[in-house]
Image 1 (tube, one colour):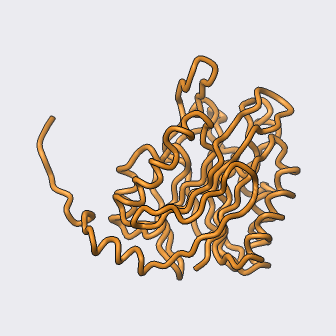
Image 2 (cartoon, helix red, strand yellow):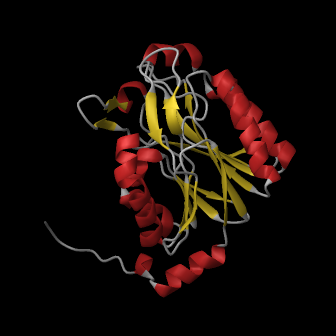
Length: 276
């Protein structure tokens, strides 16, 4: 299976973002990808909660989801919509950061709500409180496809290896990590974290990313790291999206997963222990 990782630099305007995303999804399919992946917050990247409240909608009304699902059916591809910011019915009004796996017939095959919230003081000027606007998910998700079993995660999840271990031990052969990774932490940690998750689990890691400085009508513009990565089960970087929007490709072969896990069968070597 050929995977196409779409790298975006979205604004806080879902309508404008959708046009760009559709073009790059079609480009990925035209390049032979049967599995196309977009980044976290494909529909809208914004730091302004009031603006999010004006433009985000519930899942059933989201034009990005409906349009991209229809495009997946028209193109006959599997599509991971890395995540969408969506309204929920929670009493506190918080949104969901939800990843969707869409089958080639256009149906949603799996949904995953990001579990770990990015509540971090990166620097004196880079402060994030994702949990103030988004409520965390509570359930890990493993999806079956004809070409691989897929463990779905989002961005900051990558710093919590026990989630990936659980998915791999449940059978995940491909781990998806769509992201809008901060430019400072990305430069320091992005590639190292993704390669570690691939190596320790003997799984492909596919991480489509946001990049650049994101235009904002309201609130402070954000910067993201880019460098969408595809990593093999043995840890080799198969593709790097660099720092500009576009598409990169990687070949996915589940036999490589079996080969890596056969060489170092650490998934079967976990042991109980006491302490500290």
